[in-house]
Length: 345
Image 1 (cartoon, one colour):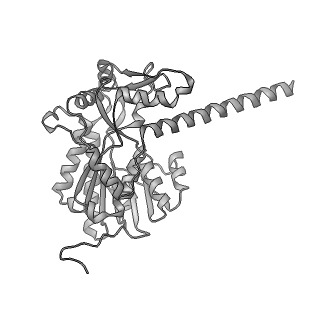
Image 2: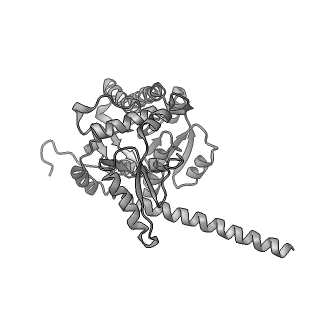
Image 3: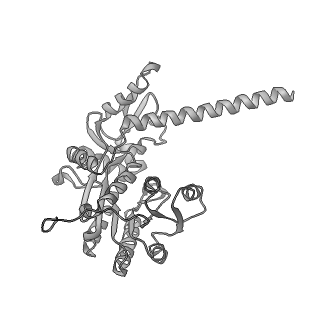
C-alpha cells in the first residue's frame, strides 16, 4: 500500500518515441547508440543531412529512424517533434573558424537554443511530450569566482533560464557535463596527444573534471529509467577528477612495457587565446573556479541509475587499440600491394 504522497517510479514506456537533436554530433551519436542498445525505445535521430555518412551509420542501428531537422529552422523542428514522448536537446556554439574570433559564436548557440525551447513548449502544450532532457554545461565549483565565464558556457546557462521562463522546468532534466576526454585529441602541432605527450590547457597540478562524451548517452538512458525522480533537476556530471600530471601518469602506466615517458604539456595560454579565445577564457575559469560536479554524490546516482562511467584509463586504452588496428590495417595493405607489385613483375 502506498504512503500518502508516495510516487510509483516508472520508466518511459517501451516503444516511446524519443527525439534526439543534432544526432550526428558527438553527444547525439552517443545518445542514439546507447538508447538503441536498450531495445526499449523508438529513436528519432534528427539531423540536417540524413544522407551524410554519419547519419547513414546511425540509421542502420536498431529502432532508429532518420529525420531531417535543423535547430535554426523552427518549422523543421515542429515536424520532427510531432508525436514524440521525450526530447533530448543539445546545441553547439561552433560555427567555422575565423581569425580573431575562433569558431565559437555565442549568439549562434543562443538562436539554436531559443528555437529548441520554443518548439519543446509547443510539443508539450499539444499533450504528448512527457520529458525534456537538455545538455548544458557544468556550473562552477566556486560560484563567487564564476566571472568572467566562457561565452559558450553562459549561452547554455541562458538557455536553461529560458526553460524556466517558459515554465518547462517541471518536465526537464538538465545534464551539465564537464570537459570531454575527446578534447585531448586536438591537432595543434607539438601538442597533440601521443604516447609521449599528454596535452592540457591548465597547469599540471590543477584538478580538472572530465568525462567521455559517450557517457552523456549513459546518463540519458539512466534518467529515462526514473523520469519522475529526475524531472525538475539539474546535475553536474563528470567521470574523472585528475590533475594534468595524474592524467599523464595514467597514460604512462598503460604503455609502461614500451619504456616511454609520457609528459604533461600545457598549451600556452596566449596561443590558446589567439586561436580560440573562448577556450582560453575557459582555461582561466577552470583554474580560478573549476567545474562543480560533486564526485561523491555522483557515485550514488550512478549506482542508482546503473551508470558505469568511462574512466580515462579505459578511454585511452580504447584509443590505443583503435590506433593499433588502423596501423595494422595499413601495414597489411602495404604488404599486399608490395606482393602484388612483385607478382606483376
